[in-house]
Image (cartoon, rainbow over all chains, first blue to last red; front, side, top):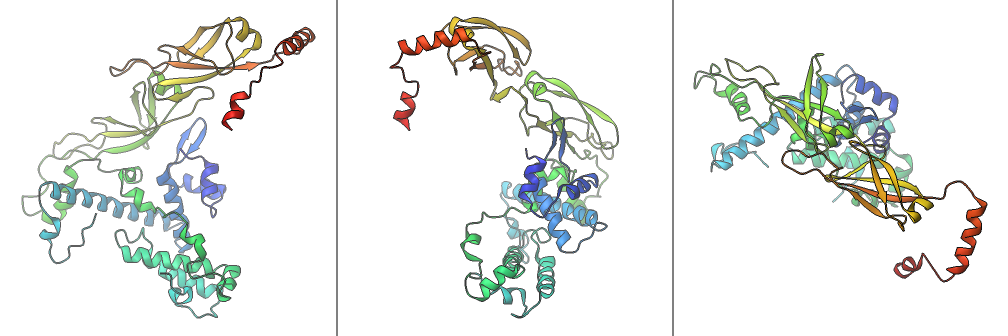
Length: 106
Length: 309
């Protein structure tokens, strides 16, 4: 598990005050324990993403909208990957089903 | 390979910082890997723009590049950098459920995807459907993970869920509480609650598999003469016999004092490592040790160290 200090060391563009605000906004969800906050790798990657979106002029008002749309997109792709796996397990080549836009990877 | 950073960003060699910044943003907005999951070409464009921007947005590095002192990849510093992991790499894996809490490994979810496209084919969504799973994280104190316990999870809505923690659970493991997820549809069963456990550290105990390690200080007298000393364990204090002639680093085993018995597995053990404490200064002891030193002038405690170093 990754501490606040370690997160700040890994993300030079981030300061503790902004991190606290983002946690309060529920943009990122570390675990709260008696020994303080702990982050997982996905949380660090998400903080990095928020920093980059900020740099791309996504403001605080739009940020939760963008994050939730991104989460939805990633979720859909995860589901799609499962469908592709299921088809392969059933002996079907997904590319054969959609010969025109067979852009299914993984 | 890397091309000229100016042409990567599509700016002139005399471009201002603002022009460079604007050009980078324009490319990044279109090509950020998280906004284009699965699009390898977009990822390459983003990486190239990033590298170019890192060079050109830093006046020092830009000047170095202009003088030909660093190449378009920004020297080998870039080459040795580990491959970056984007948010999508986690969000599309199992960890993604943390930020999008619908669907565990539930084949019914495929129905959601296809249902939108093929709703008319089999009369759509009137058949019973299992509710979606919900994902939570729960912080578990070290001793609860060793001994087993019931921990209370507060749900976002303010409700609580009592979660039975089996002894021996490890950091990152997921518990499934059947029927504690979203309600089912059309009379289908409820989904499950999937609870990822985060085990906290402990001030003195360390866990190695099912065993516990503990450093225990003893006086030189206790180690030399032997003693019975009280020692904390995850389940209360016990008395440990330190044999006469023990030394710093001597390891003593307390059977069954590690992770509690659970799930058909026997309890783990606790291993105590002795550390030596000189104790309060004592002129009599100093006299005795001076005599000891004369008698054992040839003894070298660092002999093995010297041979191996």
